[in-house]
Structures are given as structure tokens and as C-alpha cells.
Length: 103
Image (cartoon, rainbow, N blue to C red; front, side, top):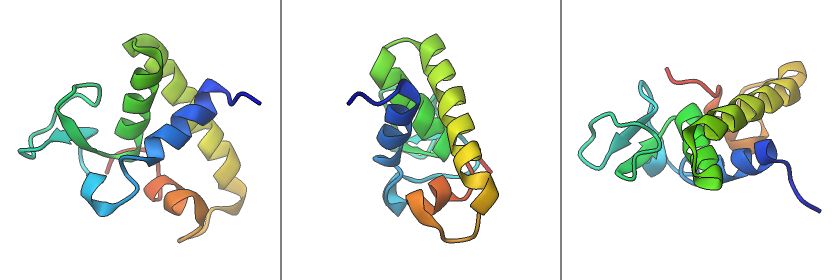
């Protein structure tokens, strides 16, 4: 069974932010030196949840426009799946680190 692009984007996005070393807040992505970079930049090493989804979408499609579309659909799926039961410390990486957008 094939997963939709949105679902695949979500699962791929969890890889880089699965531990504290890959997680960042306040910007979509940073390079190894800690400077903000575009999440699709090859130098990006740490991501917020939205940045991780943008990167995953780009890795899957190779194009920024479909990547943004996949991220939007993935975020919509996450919101729809978590809104009725959103509680602190639930599943799916703490609901993709609490929210999908940067803080």
C-alpha cells in the first residue's frame, strides 16, 4: 500500500527532529555553525517541525513548490488528527514537538 505524499512527508520529517540534536526553535533550519538557513539548503542540519516537513517534502519531490504543497497538506493532516485529542506528551514525537510551526 502506498502512502500519500502528505503522510510520507510527515514520517520523513520525524527523522531529523527525532532527537534533541536535530531540533531547533525560532527558525525553520540552521546550519552546523548555528546560522539560520533555508530548510531545503543542503547545509541545514537542525530543523523546527515545519522546516523538517519542508525539507522532507523537498527531498521527496526535488522541487520547492510541490514541497510547500506537501508541507501544507501534511500540516493540515496533523492538525486534523491531533486537534480533538491534543494533550501534552501525546504520541507522534509529542505531536511533532507540540506544534508544527516555529516558535
